[in-house]
Image (tube, rainbow, N blue to C red; front, side, top):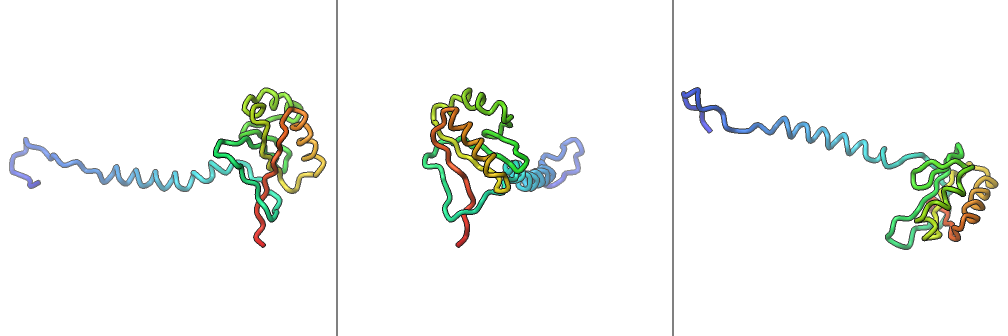
Length: 136
């Protein structure tokens, strides 16, 4: 559109360059930040030649134990003393009777077995261990 000599007309084109610049910067920020948000606590899983993968497409319930012995069930921190109570009050867990356990490989064997015992005594009959696959 060309400018005419009349000053009362005004410029009718919209400049979208600043908006595109802001959107590209936001896109880059979210691309960098998204993997960090999803990762959560770092758990050093033991390596095995097989990897357990959930069989159904439904969301499965995961219990994580990091190297500082912090227990989380689906991202919610649970105290060891209240573990049985939390499992019994989790309706989805009581309905499915299945949990996926990921524990740091540096944890003492006895501690992991103690956790598994509490889970089993809380009515969960299927405990699956999550590991990293080993490249052979």
